[in-house]
Length: 383
Image 1 (cartoon, rainbow, N blue to C red):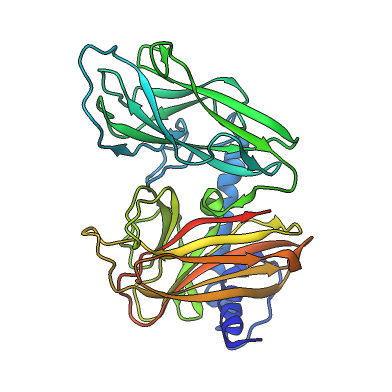
Image 2 (cartoon, rainbow, N blue to C red):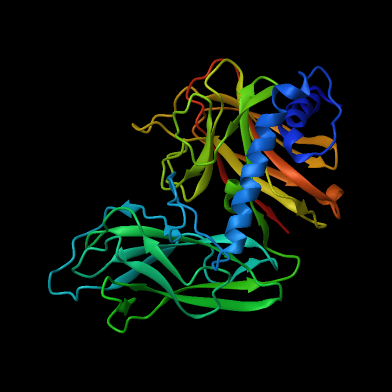
């Protein structure tokens, strides 16, 4: 085993105590009691959340695009990210929508059966009235694709002329075919409205094709992963997904419409920060997936830019591995400094075909903590 694989194995064995009922083989690791309770508690908490969701009427929840605190027992909330736009003439009707772009999953995107994915539309308030928290997004017709029938806008106000990104977590049907779901907005008076003077819906349209397209979306699964941080090879702290960016213990959350080191504006991505110490680390253990032949794990890794657009002094190592039963294996590691471009990663998973594994995404600071705002752009498995 290479030095990189050995080091990752030591890290991931420690992280995964919560996911195994038996002792895993270790070498040079601290006593299990030092951190087993932490990750066991994290896993139990996550399982309790999943049980609660499954017992509720809505089978699919929408996760905020920015970190927030859900209201217990409340209506699933819809992420709202106002984006400056042009002004709207006062002669326009009160409520009207303009579709600006399909940010994710444009029409005809191929998706494998049963895949969980997140659809995002960029909509413009093309009317003369502001959209408030009393407005909702409602399913109109077609295939709901596992999404709730109605979602509330709970934060911010979208003024006339402004854009907003609307993201809904959906699930592809188990049968192959073409599927389309139509959606509208509903105002505070309960009136539905949509695109243009005829109030046409905006929609999601996918082609479910066995064995092709996206089969696993790490961004959609990130809040179901078990996250932890620590120093060197020793994770000691359980992390709640969606925590504060500046938490000294590290962070894992979603980011959207942020500037990357390349200067490009991002879509929705996975944001990770190692613990703020010398050689700090952060890692996430993802839900199980059965690998198919010809599967590839793809991602572009790098840094989020500073507020002034500068790149910063980040220096980290991205590592990807997996757990197969009690065995921990490395798929590779990639050292990264701020070079002004994201680093593409493409891993052929064919040797794992037929195995059900849990993938692990980890970031280790290479020396002291600097501007280690690491991003995983479009981490996914395609077939």
